[in-house]
Image (cartoon, rainbow, N blue to C red; front, top):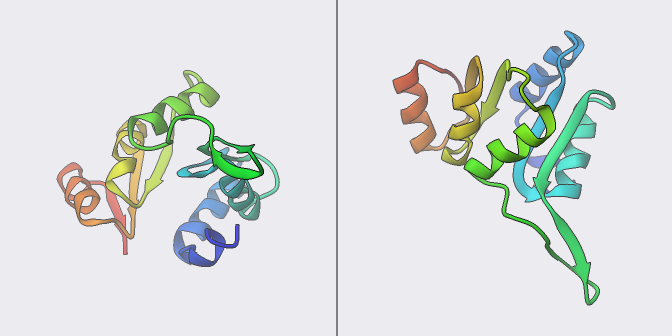
Length: 130
């Protein structure tokens, strides 16, 4: 939480909050560790907002990854495990690792994208927020 929330971009967070007010379910999917992603999601809204990150556990008193790294195609798998066959209406991403999730969505938005994602977003006609 101390790392993710201070680095947030205000425009995408406000967009997520507006979508939430319109009764959307919000899923924050990240390669960051699960507890941090959950805390970040709760700052968007306290209900219908979920964090999906890389699983972690404690071993020998130390925090460590306990499952597959939640990046690229694994993000899609993680999301589908939660939403099943429901349609993904809107997806937002900021790096090339988000492309597989963005490709699933009816509406994709590249948010302060890295160059690879920006190129893909331009090619696909996706909205870009910079």
